[in-house]
Figure 1: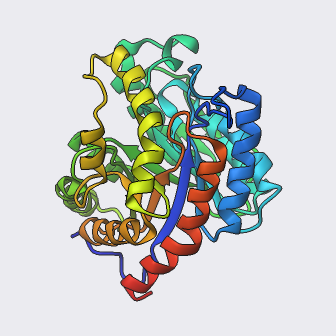
Figure 2: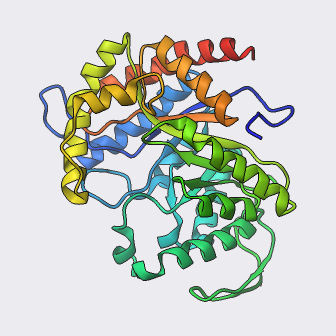
Length: 351
Protein backbone atom coordinates (compact mmCIF):
# COMPACT_ATOMS: atom_id res chain seq x y z
CA UNK A 1 0.00 0.00 0.00
CA UNK A 2 2.97 2.38 0.27
CA UNK A 3 4.57 1.95 -3.14
CA UNK A 4 4.64 4.60 -5.84
CA UNK A 5 1.62 4.77 -8.12
CA UNK A 6 2.07 2.75 -11.33
CA UNK A 7 3.77 4.86 -13.97
CA UNK A 8 4.63 7.55 -11.46
CA UNK A 9 7.17 10.16 -12.46
CA UNK A 10 10.58 10.27 -10.78
CA UNK A 11 10.59 11.43 -7.17
CA UNK A 12 10.37 15.22 -7.03
CA UNK A 13 12.35 17.37 -4.62
CA UNK A 14 11.16 20.74 -3.44
CA UNK A 15 11.92 23.42 -0.87
CA UNK A 16 9.71 25.50 1.37
CA UNK A 17 10.03 28.60 3.49
CA UNK A 18 7.85 30.48 5.95
CA UNK A 19 9.71 33.72 5.29
CA UNK A 20 11.45 33.40 8.65
CA UNK A 21 13.00 36.66 9.85
CA UNK A 22 16.71 36.15 9.29
CA UNK A 23 19.99 37.70 10.43
CA UNK A 24 22.52 39.60 8.37
CA UNK A 25 26.28 39.01 8.60
CA UNK A 26 26.48 41.12 11.77
CA UNK A 27 23.67 39.23 13.50
CA UNK A 28 21.08 41.99 13.00
CA UNK A 29 17.55 40.95 12.10
CA UNK A 30 16.44 41.93 8.61
CA UNK A 31 13.26 43.85 7.91
CA UNK A 32 10.14 42.01 6.78
CA UNK A 33 10.44 43.75 3.41
CA UNK A 34 14.01 42.55 2.86
CA UNK A 35 13.11 38.99 3.85
CA UNK A 36 10.29 38.98 1.27
CA UNK A 37 12.70 40.19 -1.42
CA UNK A 38 15.17 37.50 -0.38
CA UNK A 39 12.50 34.81 -0.63
CA UNK A 40 11.94 35.74 -4.28
CA UNK A 41 15.67 35.34 -4.89
CA UNK A 42 15.62 31.98 -3.10
CA UNK A 43 12.77 30.77 -5.30
CA UNK A 44 14.62 31.78 -8.43
CA UNK A 45 17.70 29.99 -7.10
CA UNK A 46 15.66 26.85 -6.42
CA UNK A 47 14.71 26.68 -10.09
CA UNK A 48 18.27 27.40 -11.23
CA UNK A 49 19.48 24.55 -8.97
CA UNK A 50 17.12 22.07 -10.65
CA UNK A 51 14.50 21.66 -7.92
CA UNK A 52 10.86 20.85 -8.71
CA UNK A 53 8.78 22.88 -6.26
CA UNK A 54 9.00 26.09 -4.25
CA UNK A 55 6.50 26.52 -1.43
CA UNK A 56 5.72 29.46 0.84
CA UNK A 57 3.87 29.21 4.14
CA UNK A 58 1.22 31.63 5.42
CA UNK A 59 1.67 33.14 8.89
CA UNK A 60 0.43 36.16 10.80
CA UNK A 61 3.23 36.60 13.37
CA UNK A 62 6.19 38.92 13.76
CA UNK A 63 8.76 36.11 13.35
CA UNK A 64 7.57 35.36 9.79
CA UNK A 65 7.39 37.95 7.01
CA UNK A 66 4.87 36.37 4.66
CA UNK A 67 1.13 36.63 5.30
CA UNK A 68 0.12 36.76 1.60
CA UNK A 69 2.14 34.01 -0.07
CA UNK A 70 0.26 34.12 -3.37
CA UNK A 71 1.61 37.61 -4.06
CA UNK A 72 5.19 36.46 -3.57
CA UNK A 73 4.45 33.40 -5.71
CA UNK A 74 3.08 35.70 -8.42
CA UNK A 75 6.41 37.52 -8.50
CA UNK A 76 8.12 34.16 -8.91
CA UNK A 77 5.66 33.10 -11.61
CA UNK A 78 6.95 35.95 -13.74
CA UNK A 79 10.64 35.33 -13.02
CA UNK A 80 10.79 31.52 -13.35
CA UNK A 81 9.81 29.15 -16.14
CA UNK A 82 9.70 25.56 -14.90
CA UNK A 83 9.47 25.14 -11.14
CA UNK A 84 6.05 24.50 -9.58
CA UNK A 85 4.88 27.14 -7.12
CA UNK A 86 2.56 26.78 -4.16
CA UNK A 87 1.71 27.34 -0.54
CA UNK A 88 2.93 25.40 2.46
CA UNK A 89 0.27 25.79 3.71
CA UNK A 90 -2.78 27.91 2.88
CA UNK A 91 -4.58 28.27 6.22
CA UNK A 92 -7.94 27.33 4.75
CA UNK A 93 -9.90 27.44 8.02
CA UNK A 94 -9.56 31.22 8.28
CA UNK A 95 -9.82 31.98 4.56
CA UNK A 96 -12.64 31.87 2.03
CA UNK A 97 -12.42 28.99 -0.48
CA UNK A 98 -13.79 31.14 -3.29
CA UNK A 99 -11.07 33.74 -2.78
CA UNK A 100 -8.46 31.00 -2.45
CA UNK A 101 -9.54 29.56 -5.79
CA UNK A 102 -9.55 32.99 -7.45
CA UNK A 103 -6.04 33.77 -6.24
CA UNK A 104 -4.71 30.42 -7.40
CA UNK A 105 -6.54 30.55 -10.72
CA UNK A 106 -4.76 33.87 -11.25
CA UNK A 107 -1.43 32.34 -10.20
CA UNK A 108 -2.14 29.43 -12.55
CA UNK A 109 -2.46 31.90 -15.43
CA UNK A 110 0.66 33.86 -14.51
CA UNK A 111 2.76 30.71 -14.10
CA UNK A 112 1.43 28.79 -17.13
CA UNK A 113 -0.22 26.11 -14.97
CA UNK A 114 2.48 25.64 -12.30
CA UNK A 115 0.36 26.60 -9.28
CA UNK A 116 -0.38 24.26 -6.36
CA UNK A 117 -2.46 24.64 -3.21
CA UNK A 118 -1.49 22.77 -0.06
CA UNK A 119 -4.53 23.40 2.10
CA UNK A 120 -4.21 22.89 5.83
CA UNK A 121 -5.07 24.21 9.26
CA UNK A 122 -1.59 25.53 10.03
CA UNK A 123 0.36 25.19 13.26
CA UNK A 124 -0.61 28.62 14.65
CA UNK A 125 -4.01 30.14 15.36
CA UNK A 126 -3.36 33.91 15.08
CA UNK A 127 -5.37 34.09 11.85
CA UNK A 128 -8.62 33.06 13.57
CA UNK A 129 -9.18 36.21 15.69
CA UNK A 130 -7.52 38.33 13.01
CA UNK A 131 -10.19 37.43 10.46
CA UNK A 132 -13.06 37.06 12.90
CA UNK A 133 -13.32 33.26 13.22
CA UNK A 134 -14.18 31.40 16.39
CA UNK A 135 -11.70 28.74 17.49
CA UNK A 136 -14.65 26.75 18.82
CA UNK A 137 -15.50 26.12 15.15
CA UNK A 138 -11.98 24.85 14.37
CA UNK A 139 -12.98 21.42 13.03
CA UNK A 140 -16.19 22.50 11.31
CA UNK A 141 -14.54 25.42 9.52
CA UNK A 142 -11.89 23.25 7.92
CA UNK A 143 -14.29 20.45 7.00
CA UNK A 144 -16.76 22.77 5.28
CA UNK A 145 -14.16 24.86 3.51
CA UNK A 146 -12.20 21.87 2.26
CA UNK A 147 -15.38 20.35 0.84
CA UNK A 148 -16.08 23.57 -1.04
CA UNK A 149 -12.49 24.02 -2.27
CA UNK A 150 -12.43 20.42 -3.51
CA UNK A 151 -15.39 21.29 -5.76
CA UNK A 152 -14.08 24.68 -6.81
CA UNK A 153 -10.64 23.48 -7.92
CA UNK A 154 -11.92 22.32 -11.32
CA UNK A 155 -13.16 25.80 -12.26
CA UNK A 156 -16.66 24.60 -13.20
CA UNK A 157 -19.94 26.00 -11.80
CA UNK A 158 -20.55 24.92 -8.21
CA UNK A 159 -23.63 24.42 -6.07
CA UNK A 160 -22.88 23.99 -2.38
CA UNK A 161 -24.37 24.71 1.04
CA UNK A 162 -23.01 24.52 4.58
CA UNK A 163 -23.53 25.92 8.07
CA UNK A 164 -20.73 28.51 8.34
CA UNK A 165 -20.66 30.12 4.90
CA UNK A 166 -23.36 31.36 2.48
CA UNK A 167 -24.46 28.80 -0.11
CA UNK A 168 -23.53 28.82 -3.81
CA UNK A 169 -26.12 28.04 -6.49
CA UNK A 170 -24.61 26.94 -9.80
CA UNK A 171 -22.02 29.70 -9.34
CA UNK A 172 -19.23 30.17 -11.87
CA UNK A 173 -16.03 31.50 -10.31
CA UNK A 174 -13.55 33.56 -12.33
CA UNK A 175 -11.02 33.63 -13.88
CA UNK A 176 -11.53 30.56 -16.07
CA UNK A 177 -8.81 27.92 -15.99
CA UNK A 178 -6.78 26.84 -19.00
CA UNK A 179 -6.05 23.52 -17.28
CA UNK A 180 -8.45 20.92 -15.90
CA UNK A 181 -7.91 21.96 -12.28
CA UNK A 182 -5.65 23.68 -9.77
CA UNK A 183 -3.58 20.95 -8.16
CA UNK A 184 -4.78 20.82 -4.56
CA UNK A 185 -3.23 18.80 -1.72
CA UNK A 186 -4.46 18.35 1.84
CA UNK A 187 -1.72 19.02 4.39
CA UNK A 188 -2.02 16.85 7.50
CA UNK A 189 -0.03 16.59 10.70
CA UNK A 190 -0.66 13.05 11.79
CA UNK A 191 -4.26 12.37 12.78
CA UNK A 192 -6.19 9.49 11.19
CA UNK A 193 -9.25 11.74 10.89
CA UNK A 194 -7.33 14.19 8.70
CA UNK A 195 -6.06 11.39 6.47
CA UNK A 196 -9.57 9.99 6.02
CA UNK A 197 -10.89 13.48 5.26
CA UNK A 198 -8.37 13.89 2.43
CA UNK A 199 -9.35 10.50 1.01
CA UNK A 200 -13.07 11.29 1.23
CA UNK A 201 -12.54 14.32 -1.03
CA UNK A 202 -10.24 12.38 -3.37
CA UNK A 203 -7.37 14.80 -2.82
CA UNK A 204 -3.64 13.95 -2.67
CA UNK A 205 -2.07 13.81 0.79
CA UNK A 206 0.77 16.00 2.06
CA UNK A 207 2.32 14.83 5.33
CA UNK A 208 3.96 17.36 7.68
CA UNK A 209 6.71 15.28 9.29
CA UNK A 210 8.44 17.65 11.70
CA UNK A 211 9.46 15.32 14.51
CA UNK A 212 9.78 11.76 15.67
CA UNK A 213 10.49 8.95 13.22
CA UNK A 214 9.03 9.23 9.71
CA UNK A 215 8.53 5.46 9.58
CA UNK A 216 5.71 5.95 12.12
CA UNK A 217 3.65 7.62 9.36
CA UNK A 218 3.51 4.40 7.33
CA UNK A 219 0.28 3.31 9.02
CA UNK A 220 -1.35 6.63 8.07
CA UNK A 221 -0.32 6.21 4.44
CA UNK A 222 -1.77 2.70 4.44
CA UNK A 223 -4.97 4.04 6.00
CA UNK A 224 -5.15 6.76 3.34
CA UNK A 225 -4.89 4.33 0.42
CA UNK A 226 -7.47 2.01 1.98
CA UNK A 227 -9.80 4.94 2.59
CA UNK A 228 -9.49 6.10 -1.02
CA UNK A 229 -10.48 2.64 -2.15
CA UNK A 230 -13.40 2.44 0.27
CA UNK A 231 -14.72 5.82 -0.92
CA UNK A 232 -14.43 4.71 -4.55
CA UNK A 233 -11.80 7.36 -5.33
CA UNK A 234 -8.92 7.14 -7.79
CA UNK A 235 -5.41 6.46 -6.38
CA UNK A 236 -3.66 9.66 -5.30
CA UNK A 237 -0.11 10.74 -4.61
CA UNK A 238 1.44 11.17 -1.18
CA UNK A 239 4.15 13.74 -0.47
CA UNK A 240 5.90 14.86 2.70
CA UNK A 241 7.41 17.99 4.24
CA UNK A 242 10.51 17.82 6.45
CA UNK A 243 12.81 20.39 8.03
CA UNK A 244 16.46 20.34 7.04
CA UNK A 245 19.64 21.87 5.69
CA UNK A 246 22.22 20.54 3.24
CA UNK A 247 25.83 21.46 4.03
CA UNK A 248 29.27 20.18 3.09
CA UNK A 249 29.30 17.74 6.02
CA UNK A 250 27.09 16.47 8.82
CA UNK A 251 29.21 18.37 11.33
CA UNK A 252 28.90 21.65 9.43
CA UNK A 253 25.13 21.24 9.15
CA UNK A 254 24.85 20.75 12.92
CA UNK A 255 26.92 23.83 13.71
CA UNK A 256 25.06 25.98 11.18
CA UNK A 257 21.67 24.85 12.45
CA UNK A 258 22.14 24.83 16.19
CA UNK A 259 22.06 28.56 17.16
CA UNK A 260 19.01 29.25 14.99
CA UNK A 261 17.24 26.03 15.99
CA UNK A 262 17.88 26.85 19.66
CA UNK A 263 16.50 30.37 19.34
CA UNK A 264 13.39 29.25 17.45
CA UNK A 265 12.59 26.28 19.69
CA UNK A 266 13.04 28.31 22.84
CA UNK A 267 10.78 31.05 21.54
CA UNK A 268 8.06 28.61 20.57
CA UNK A 269 8.67 26.66 23.74
CA UNK A 270 7.96 29.70 25.87
CA UNK A 271 4.54 29.95 24.17
CA UNK A 272 3.71 26.25 24.27
CA UNK A 273 5.35 25.02 27.45
CA UNK A 274 8.12 23.02 25.81
CA UNK A 275 11.42 22.31 27.58
CA UNK A 276 14.54 24.25 26.59
CA UNK A 277 16.11 23.30 23.26
CA UNK A 278 18.80 20.65 23.43
CA UNK A 279 21.66 20.13 21.00
CA UNK A 280 21.42 16.41 21.75
CA UNK A 281 17.79 16.38 20.56
CA UNK A 282 18.81 18.17 17.38
CA UNK A 283 21.53 15.58 16.79
CA UNK A 284 18.98 12.81 17.33
CA UNK A 285 16.62 14.42 14.80
CA UNK A 286 19.51 14.56 12.33
CA UNK A 287 20.34 10.90 12.95
CA UNK A 288 19.56 8.02 10.65
CA UNK A 289 15.92 7.60 11.67
CA UNK A 290 15.16 11.19 12.71
CA UNK A 291 12.89 13.53 10.78
CA UNK A 292 15.46 16.28 10.19
CA UNK A 293 16.89 16.06 6.66
CA UNK A 294 20.13 17.79 7.55
CA UNK A 295 23.75 16.92 6.85
CA UNK A 296 26.02 16.25 3.90
CA UNK A 297 24.54 15.63 0.43
CA UNK A 298 25.14 11.89 0.87
CA UNK A 299 23.46 11.79 4.29
CA UNK A 300 20.42 13.74 3.14
CA UNK A 301 20.08 11.75 -0.09
CA UNK A 302 20.16 8.42 1.75
CA UNK A 303 17.45 9.55 4.17
CA UNK A 304 15.27 10.88 1.36
CA UNK A 305 15.52 7.61 -0.52
CA UNK A 306 14.72 5.52 2.52
CA UNK A 307 11.77 7.63 3.64
CA UNK A 308 10.34 7.91 0.13
CA UNK A 309 10.44 4.13 -0.27
CA UNK A 310 8.95 3.46 3.17
CA UNK A 311 6.09 5.90 2.65
CA UNK A 312 5.59 5.68 -1.10
CA UNK A 313 6.23 9.39 -1.66
CA UNK A 314 5.97 11.23 -4.95
CA UNK A 315 7.69 14.34 -3.61
CA UNK A 316 9.85 15.35 -0.68
CA UNK A 317 9.97 19.01 0.36
CA UNK A 318 12.52 20.42 2.77
CA UNK A 319 11.82 23.56 4.78
CA UNK A 320 15.25 25.10 4.27
CA UNK A 321 14.55 28.28 6.26
CA UNK A 322 15.48 27.67 9.88
CA UNK A 323 14.61 30.61 12.08
CA UNK A 324 17.20 33.38 11.93
CA UNK A 325 19.60 31.47 9.65
CA UNK A 326 21.18 33.92 7.16
CA UNK A 327 20.01 34.15 3.56
CA UNK A 328 23.44 33.21 2.21
CA UNK A 329 23.52 29.95 4.18
CA UNK A 330 20.07 29.02 2.89
CA UNK A 331 21.05 29.83 -0.69
CA UNK A 332 24.00 27.46 -0.42
CA UNK A 333 21.77 24.74 1.04
CA UNK A 334 19.30 25.12 -1.84
CA UNK A 335 22.16 24.85 -4.33
CA UNK A 336 23.49 21.66 -2.76
CA UNK A 337 20.02 20.11 -2.60
CA UNK A 338 19.41 20.68 -6.30
CA UNK A 339 22.86 20.05 -7.76
CA UNK A 340 24.17 17.28 -5.48
CA UNK A 341 21.37 15.68 -3.47
CA UNK A 342 18.81 15.39 -6.28
CA UNK A 343 21.16 13.55 -8.69
CA UNK A 344 22.19 11.18 -5.89
CA UNK A 345 18.57 10.46 -4.99
CA UNK A 346 17.51 9.77 -8.56
CA UNK A 347 20.54 7.56 -9.10
CA UNK A 348 19.81 5.55 -5.93
CA UNK A 349 16.20 5.13 -7.02
CA UNK A 350 17.24 4.15 -10.54
CA UNK A 351 15.23 6.93 -12.17
